[in-house]
Length: 285
Image 1 (cartoon, rainbow, N blue to C red):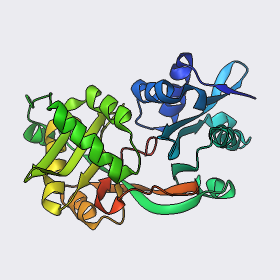
Image 2 (image 1 turned 90 degrees about the vertical axis):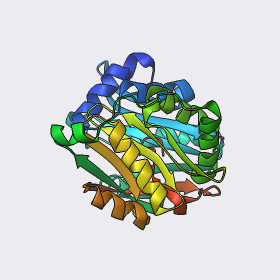
Image 3 (image 1 turned 135 degrees about the horizontal axis):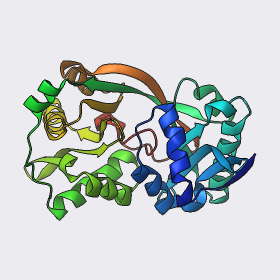
């Protein structure tokens, strides 16, 4: 088993592993990692075939993210996932990144704990499955695709405070691919909330989603529902956010699985999670 840097030529093989796992990411998500952190993305290769993946992305060198840790089911139990994680840690430590973060499944949490990761807070994935009639009733074609550049800049600046670091390049990439999902609500000249979304392989994904109050949270979520024409919608919301939890239940979302945000190192930039309804996604934070 050989570990090496991932290249764009590996994306189709990585997508195969993603499909086996039933995840929602697309080719564009792999490209975002490679365009931002090519040297920090890795594959495990055996007999010329990719059997595992792991990707990293650093945010202002304040902290880095580890995501897309996948292992071919036929090769599990051989320590491939652990070796890939150790490789990402080795790489990020060499880059002098003071903190590494990730979102762990219950199965992965014990492995991360052995590698020095500590829990920060809990996240839950919820989904909404709509029948075609419901989609047609909620979908509104013709939403303006272009937001003013000033509003987009205001959103990414607000996100820097909420997330804990600048990820404007990442968010602008998400916005360019699905501008219809980007929303910002202001009152008295001040941004009260924002939301973005992505079109995944089988579902549309809401996030990040931030709101200062329940009314703003509802407006943003309802805009997302009305701008999506997919049967399945996904949200990864902070379990501590009662406003988001109650709202998702009222909209018909149901619980799928828990996730634990974890960190290794000094968590000096935790962000302002009390106003965060949902994350961008486990792969990006």
